[in-house]
Every structure is written in structure tokens, then in C-alpha cells.
Length: 230
Image (cartoon, rainbow, N blue to C red; front, side, top):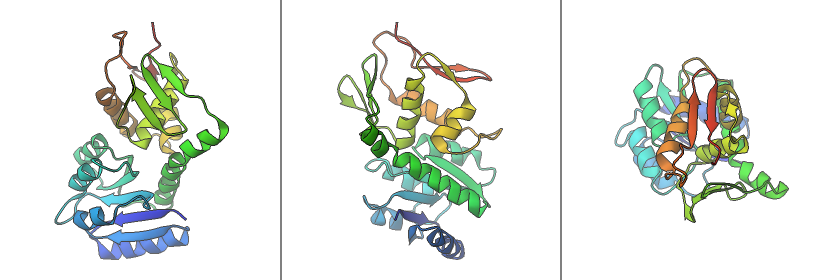
């Protein structure tokens, strides 16, 4: 049974969501502020649902501190229209976001999609999915681990999955729609910039290639391409 840490200062909402998620087969732990959430987080937590507007330590501050020592998947719960918070959350390593008010079924679908991706590395190890090497970048799906010239890179699970998918299609354009469906488990909507922010994070985190080529090219209206080696 997957264990979810639900972090929100709205006690009525957390009570309702706890009931919903337990009916869906999840084990739910509740925290009402960021300080409490950071005390609860450990390796037994499979996913965080993290509200942004909270007392003591808000969701952005909590995520920033969390990412210093944990790569646990995080779905940010944001106020509708708070684009700056969404962008900042994704830059800090959130896997996805969901604006309030949200549909119960959409929330459950997003959670299951992220958890499926989290279990992806174990599945790849079982079926022997190959390690990919591009320039000095090595991608190991069994460990969900990326390294460059032997140094492990600090990527979230979502960032790794996106990077591996693009590497599998090296030199080919992959549409944003396909990336959103395969990596985040959701259909792309017109103003959804989650994939773009994850690409931006990868550009920032990946070291420069030895062949001096960029890692990715953006093809407006078509998608993203991972550049082949010379």
C-alpha cells in the first residue's frame, strides 16, 4: 500500500481528502504545515501532496528544504491562477501541480500516474532495459540514476524519466503532448508548462557536453529533440 503525506492547513479539506484517498487504497498521513511535514518525511513516504499557502513554513519553502535531502515525488496544490507559484515549484523540483479547486478523480489519476513512474525503475531493472550513453552522460533506468563522467547528477524521478525518454529518441523530435502523457501521465492542456519547466531544469543541471553541442533543441509547435553526438 502506497503511503501519501498530505500537507495542507485546511483541516476540513485534509479530512475529506484522507477519506477519499483511503477509499482508493492509499495510506494517508496528514501534516498541517511545512515544519510538521519535514518531521514526518522519511523513506516510507511514496508521495507528497503539498499545499503552497500554509503558516510557519509555506509549501515553496518546504519543497526547497525537502529537495536538499529527498527526491520523494511531490504534487503541488496551488491556487488557480497562481502561475508564479507553479513555475517556482517546478523549478525547485516538484513533479507536477494541481490547481484548486480540483476534481477528485483528476487528483487520484495524477497520484497514480506519478506512482507508476516511481515504480518504473524497478520494472526496467526486471526486464533489463538498457543503460544509455550519450557523450559522457550515462543513464541507468534500473537505478533511475544519471551520471556524467562518473559523477551522479541530482535529478528528480520525473526529470530522469523525461531525460531517458528523450535519449531513447535521440535525434528525433518528441512532441510535448507525448512527453506529458508518458512522463506525467496526463493530457497536455493549452497553458500547461510543466514539461517546459522540467526541460529547463535539465538544461540547468546537466554539465556541458564535451562536443560543445546543446543537450536539447526546442522546435516551436513540434516539441523537443535531444541532440545526437557528432
